[in-house]
Length: 175
Image (cartoon, rainbow, N blue to C red):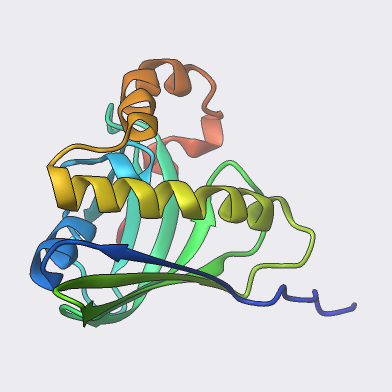
């Protein structure tokens, strides 16, 4: 059997006019709706830490949208985890968020690695990186997501109607 070919890393950098601690706290928040993560809520047991399982759930808490394991957690500069979309039967990739103080604000870097070339996951990740960066920037700078993030949160009830049975939270435990 042939090993899958991995795509080259995808890197998105965005300058956020906010202190690094603000960006970090916003990025790693758990148990509240995160408009920059498509209106999902990050859930973990005992907080984000290396080797902790995490999942991004729909606001109704019945659907797991993304699951992963924390690979690196170095406040306030680096958070990395595996990333598997529960509606796609493909191997996970790795997502790394790097923060660096710069010019009175924060440089936010989103790195996507180890996605299988040509995969649906890679396609989704490429499409989502700008959305994540622009909505994180807006939340940190203004306290509100960009219009795309506000619309995504409003669409949450409709999105839930299209979830597959295999995406139910009970199928993706944190333990």
